[in-house]
View 1 (cartoon, rainbow, N blue to C red):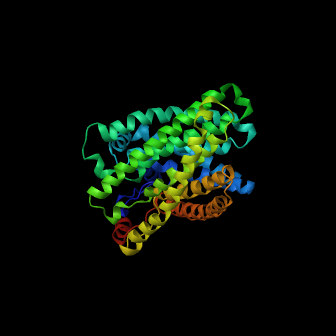
View 2 (cartoon, rainbow, N blue to C red; view 1 turned 60 degrees about the vertical axis):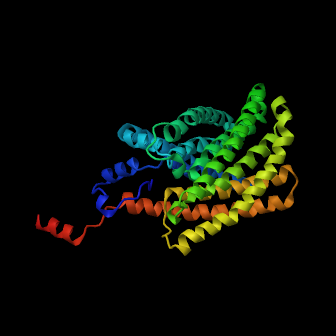
Length: 373
């Protein structure tokens, strides 16, 4: 993957060296690629474009496996870089993208009746990772040994903690309605409502932390990175999770909370919709007003995922609450998400070619030295 940006002087001369350098610089949030591709695949299936949805699902699956392999290599060869990421409040919460990516992929796979077993396995992996990261990342990045004040580095990636929780709720609620898992219905309903509730609380808590940071620490254009879109994406996946829980079959936990969750879903959809114009204006302020160059970076997938999730969430909410206008908004938004996904995917491939696959060009001095030798 086009994983790390390096200066020309830092680019190794061999392909193996460039690949190793890219793996060393792999951001923990790169699983947002899988999140974005998976949710756009779900959106296209919802719109009736099954072949396109399958193609996107294949891309998401391949990217998921490739990223797992790259992260295993990174653990084996560059363990100190993993430790640095876990200790950095600005990057550590990116590890939760693995949880969300696993669940989004599982939600897409669960739409194919012959792959429900795979979806269950992905839910188990995601749930374990959610618990492990949920108790370790806040400690290593925020509560443990402090190199900087954590509040000064709070950013949009912190919202991924909430997204990961809600992704568990989406997949659990989706599988709860499958007849093959009727004996596990109560447990899946409990997991769905539990993780939805935790995710909702985390969203509010992170919103306070990020708000305090923006009000108390000088906020530069360089600080307004794409992950701030996750603030909107977290509301959208909360809507999807809520809609799935409302549609769950009868279970005590679902029956006790269905009305509350249905109302909260509308609230989060309205707030997420309200966030879109400020986020667009923030991008204008960063790239037009202050002329920060717009180039490919892994965090751009943090824009694609919220757009896709907003489209899917709006369509689900429109169906569950019989709101045709909301459903229409989601339909249009899903195509916007596909267009942005396509542009970002092409940019990623170009960046991969330029920074990893293509040999670095020699400077005139280097060429002269090589000829002299």
